[in-house]
Image (cartoon, rainbow, N blue to C red; front, top):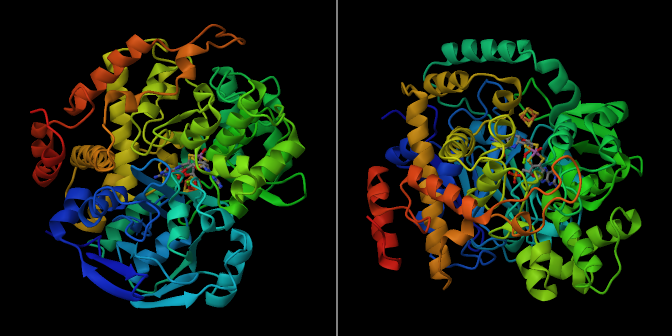
Amino acid sequence: MTTKGWWGKLLWIDLSRREAKQVEIDKNLLSSYVGGRGLAVRLLWDYTRPGIDPLSPENLLIVAIGPITGLPGPSTGKVVVAAKSPLTHGYGDGNLGSRTAVMLKKAGFDAVVFSGKSEKPSYVYIENEKVEINNADDLWGLDTFTAEKRLLERHGKDAGVLLIGPSGERKVKMATIISQMGRSGGRPGIGAVMGSKNLKAIVVRGTRDPPVDDLKSLRETAAKAYIEAKNKPAYPFWIRQGTMATIQWSQENSVLPTYNFSEGVFDESSGIDGFTMEKMKVSQRGCPNCNSICGNVVLDASGEESELDYENVAMLGSNIGLGDLKKVAQLNRLADMWGIDTIGLGSAIGFAIEASQKGFINEKMEWGDFPKILELAEDIALRRTKLGDDLAEGLVHASSVYGCEECAIHVKGLSVSAYDCHAAPGMALSYGVSSVGAHHKDAWVISWEVSHGRFAYSPEKAKKVLELQKIRGGFFENIVACRLPWVELGLELDWYVKLFNFATGLRWRLDDHMVVAERTLTLIRSYWVREYHAEGRTWNRKMDYPPIKWFTRPYTRGPLKGARLDPQKYDELLGYYYELLGWDHRGIPRASTLRRLGLGDVESTLGKIIELTN
Ligand code: PTT
Ligand code: SF4
């Protein structure tokens, strides 16, 4: 098999021993998992002991790219960061745009793996094969914007930087990894894993020519794909509003998270929507290699620049009762500077306000009370105060301390991203079975669902969820490219298949990628089951249930007043989904499924822990 497209090498950095070595990656492994997420979960499965503490030196922090990352082609400047999650204790990852993606490709590696723990705060500098583990005393404690500026002054403006802020240093369980002052990845606490290793930053520079099978055809195809993206009818409006257009769409379709996911409409939504943003916009940013840049920059309530996206604005806006975009933008900027997930933060604040109003928390809090919200946000991000510290441990912990299980809007410990599902069973299923907890990244089925029998719990819906999971959570996470030109502009998937083939020399069809996607999904599920059992818990189908509130508390207002999910029908929908994948009634892959996907070794490991259904 060719290793064109891949370097066939990973860089393994043991922070405890302060040693770096280059490790050849088995060629079959590369074609079986492709890269990014697929490669990351395989490395976690193979190289971590079951049941490790995610914040111990035993956990691995993995930074992985894919065969087309960093090469010419629309939006190929993305990188996957992964680890066992300290928030969910299962598989965790995130995907962010960063020059690091491009530089890692040029440095000569498909992934960097960090093991162990540095004795003192440090940062790693990689320049091709040269690796330095440097002292980070002068960076520790700095916010991500200041620290990144300092590193770029030191190592050159074009270096790729991934780093954590004060939240990651404090091991806040929703801390993320930040890049380029406004790109964030790793919602399940991947920033906390980096902090637990005393690793402040990773700086990468590379100057090599990546191995590509047919560079001429790749370049020609990429050039055509860029033009095609620009000519799509949706392009002009996308450039104007980016993901912010979704605020109005969500409001119109009653899925805008409001008052901690109690309602789907917000009276002040026009104060935070894409049109309001357009009036405030001062510039536009984006990820490397992208000509559809969607990062809209506005000036916030304190006059500083803040880059907005839909999830950030919905979770720090309507979800906590804030209808002033400048204030929302301020919270969003601070979250990036602290290095904390905006979705997790908005959900933690929503939990606190609702729990306060229902008498579970003594402190008095109101929806939209900006000074109080600002203070609480900082308490969480910096672990100040008892309440802040409890919320920094995640919603499962917070609800175990304060009660009000209904106020904790999460799946498997990861807070739900910004689509309310009282009236969207398919999207609820997407959250229920997402690879990392409750995330829309794998199957954003909601836009299809509202126009295809919204209230149905049909097998067709389960099929659509799986189809999207394979494309979004499998194909795009494995080749490691941004999915938005496909989702939002309608750029055909075939462009990416062609780029992959010209890079690798393989002649794959989309179906071949779908097999890898299914293997990836099934290995991720096996990893969750392995870790749950190793930690003394038992996996069951209730793990794949969405938050209880969507079943028990109907909408009290808006056009869909009275809507809620039906638990029995949801359970049936879940059953259809398991059948499609060849998973049993518990949601555990059957032995025959593992064998069919070439995961025989996983079958024998899992079979020793738990009885597998054939
Ligand atoms: C992603 C999640 C999202 S998804 C958003 S906004 W979105 C939030 N962004 C945050 C942020 O910003 N700062 C912060 N402190 N926390 C944040 N938490 C939230 O994190 C992002 C874009 C967007 S904008 C989306 S949908 C797409 N996501 C992709 C993906 O997951 N995979 C992929 N192959 N392509 C994608 N393209 C799009 O990228 P997580 P980014 Mg993010 C500031 O990582 O952990 O998965 O959480 O990467 O470079 O910021 O671009 O309406
Ligand atoms: Fe980044 Fe947006 Fe371009 Fe995707 S479409 S690569 S998120 S700028």
